[in-house]
Image (tube, rainbow, N blue to C red; front, top):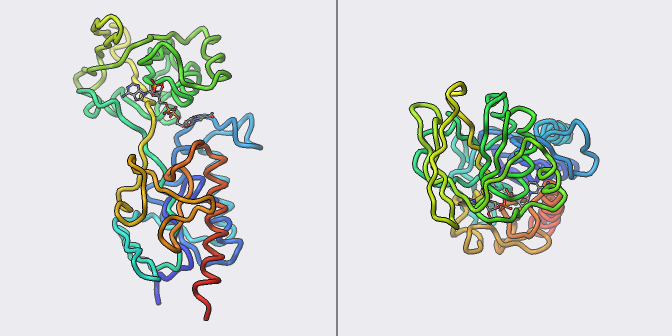
Length: 315
Ligand code: NAP
């Protein structure tokens, strides 16, 4: 029968690619549905400085490329397809993709999370026209221009530091008067002469005719609204939004247990409440969403999927 697998891995970030590597090494017939792109969050991350062994020249895309090469080497199949519906009710799980249908003895969900938007007027219309969610992808457009970074977490502050290599001035716009980012990352930002801070502030509107020309900043303490316009010589400025992530799990709603925010509940073996269905990486309920924990989850899920198949599909 066509498209019958030991394991279908949904998602090709560090969790999915690690699961593919381990499944391949265990000689399982595995396929990774990689959606529209491989790499997940790290594919759009400028620096990955806290994954062991990944130092100096390590960027998200270079690390992703090495993970893909390694998974391929051990024989996991990869297809450019996205799951649109799943049926986990039978012993054989059915995953319907945009391009094909897959049957699997086990499934590893590794669909990760996606950047959150601010939700203010003008944001969607001007995305890709000055508004960005990816410094690695778009920093180059802001050479010698000004940029505003929205958010105060690790991502916002790390990407702000990265953007100082391109932009003339980088302003971190944070809704409180204290950053959420790790102290070590904060220190680097405070010591960077190109970075300024706009505390207790949020962007409430982004304006421009085909390109960002101004934005309205609301001070949550004073209640004041200030519209900042691009310098005449520049004509535009950048707005990079890093305000957290939402889980990518709509397709699995009602099929596996989730918490109230849509993250999938698993045990320490990555097992969901459905036999044979595992979840790994940022999509699952956990305290630390990092490349290292995603990779570990993927490895555990693949090993547990293999054990499950051995026990449940005895000839
Ligand atoms: P995060 O930790 O959830 O931080 C989101 C930031 O955006 C917070 O500062 C939050 O403000 C702010 N925010 C949320 N909604 C907002 C809104 N509507 N308007 C304005 N600001 C808003 O997200 P993250 O920085 O992307 O990090 C996600 C996870 O990845 C974290 O666990 C983080 O530690 C991890 N990470 C780690 C590294 C690293 O270790 N090098 C790098 C990147 C990410 P408040 O602070 O007021 O809530």
